[in-house]
Image (tube, rainbow, N blue to C red; front, top):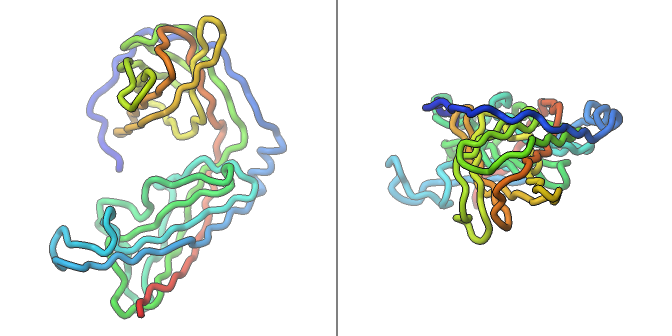
Length: 273
């Protein structure tokens, strides 16, 4: 869901770019261009009302979701390099059962493509969910869905490193195309270790990993614990084993991602005996 940005960020004088390192090859980029992704269905859920039918919050057969119909679709790209799904660029042409009932929510607050896609098999596969707040007709035997899934694919990595700075509130680190402002730092709220919370207006979807280079040149891994995005602003909490008061921030990210629209046309049996 996209929210309107509620506040602007005041940035302090920024640090200049320290270094950018490239990895990958022309062959891998050409391979990405020649890949032919496919999108078969991997599972189906029909979530009918079991109590309080007709109410705004009825009891459903499956708990933990408001969706009444859900398809799990897997996009396979033999050449690998899948880094995400662009929901805004994806589209659905039809979603209906064999009685002709449409399951497309024309005025619903959510799009048909669910959140939380999973990238597996080393980036050669991404699993996502297509869902509807409508259940098929009781006498339906099949449901069909067709459309296009916009998959982001990249084969070149870049590492950007900031100049040295202090990890204190309002400090700003510039790592190539990324500008991150420290919002908070202190003992981890998720367990052992120390956390640093950053805020940025940059898209972090292509980031692979983060780390700190300390004064002795040692690399200190930063593990993402949580990310919250509101409009164009994201807050990300990174956790390391021990407190780091100063150093250089490094980010490895996919570069020059391309979007491929992968067509899908899937049908699943939904009747109960």
